[in-house]
Image (tube, rainbow, N blue to C red):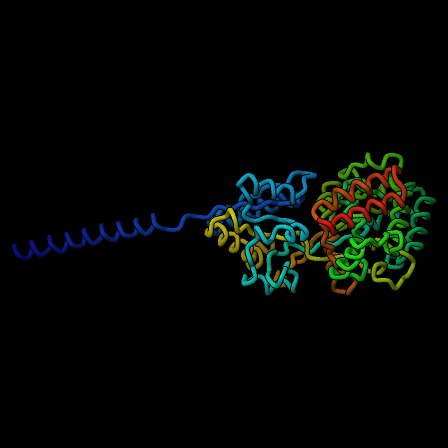
Length: 433
């Protein structure tokens, strides 16, 4: 009997213990930190799908959700993000241009100086007043994209584009292509961001090839320097006029369609498109394949064949990720930091960034190589020392204001003098703001 009582007591204790353990596990489980949910404003429309795939992979690994919010086509990222702040739904992570972060960091940006990924960026993390406020999302380069096969096919012989290293040699090549049947070998996009930032921006970035140098010439313009007395401005206009002369849309330059331009270059109707590495997804949609001969030649400025502007292209860390310190909770800020580290250190993320998003990562520890020819061309040029890293800093309305002035010039509705006056007025006005 005693033996039976003892057994019952042991059994009861075991059941109680088991229940207690189960209760404890249930309590621990219910007390587990819930999965984080953050938002990410994307201002690179061509990588929207790839970013969504990255977010899915991240959620699968960690349980944390990242909503990728697209910045609308033609929408200025600075305007988008400030509107979201004013509406009380600021993104946890914002992909912005460096210019924008300079305008916003004091009020909105988390200090990222102590993040693990900073050591992997070769000094390309956006640092202001000694603190890191921006994660460099990618390396991008710009110049004049070529279709090598279209050039060779039209001229019926191979052209070593490495020998094209000045305004005059480029002009001669355009003349040859026209004479051989390619009437207008150039596609010029009409978008204000392309004209105002990526093309006219060469007058700042080629001051001496550094961001510090671009700041010097901008400072001179703010203090009243007449653009007509600045060699780079005059060289730029000369090349821009040449491109306009051979523009496929010469008769109606503001009627140019960006997507059609990509198709025209992809199928060899034109041979050149002043643009950047971000154009590959558009070219691929237009029919270009990764085994074809696409790459960059410089946006030529003058006839000095030893000038770095004529031997190299601009390539720098762009599209900065800024973390919100105002409307995001502490948990969301930490989740955002974790996501950035995942982008840099996780093998799946490293691969998806390069193979799906087609970007050149700024992080040196990413072992993956670009698959598209534009990215490959930039990586090769960087290894050969044929790039310059300047990334000029301008107010957020620069591309729209100066882009509009460039559109008038492209359309023949203003003169070079008018454009110079508009440029000067813009910069002089910045000094008084």
